[in-house]
Length: 233
Image (cartoon, rainbow, N blue to C red; front, side, top):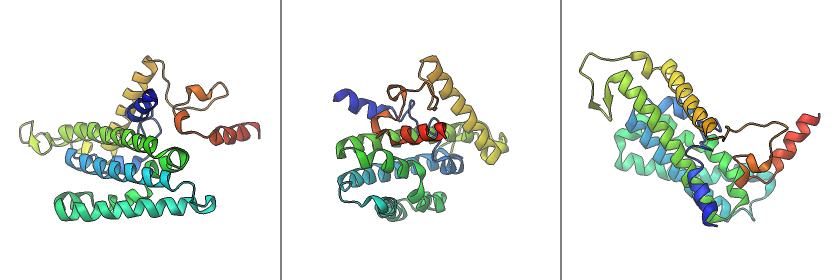
């Protein structure tokens, strides 16, 4: 039991990183990773929503009708996003202004919806909480690493603290191409680490087994059944 909880907590950081391995939530990742402060703000906000929505959806999983489960999940997530927006606007107005539209868009963040559908709706409240913490940490860590690279190289600062003398900047690093470059670089580094440890990133092939799948802890085997149906078509 302790091993399972530990795996749920730490898998999201590298092995099942939602951005770098599962390739979810790329839009906010590219958009808010220009500054470290914005990255931490978005990461903490998304983690709070992820943990709370996972726990509530897990608690209500037996009473949510299957046919309307997605609208129900969105309603739960939207409630927590609204709370985050109100708190951020009240206590961190500058950060709220910086993140802008990306705060309400947490409602449709595919990381949060994906964990609700794949994990929280099939597991206990405690397991769902650990899953939310792990995925949130992975998302926040990815944003922080990418933002550090982009802010230091692009502006010569870190958390607005001047590290490199005035006049230095690589403007492209704080633009869209710089975001894609940094994203690819960090993703390649994670893939290399996983390959070195013999833990290949998520992929589907005929040789895959449930034991080797990074989503095994939260999977009801429906995804595998669907995959087999596609392959046999």
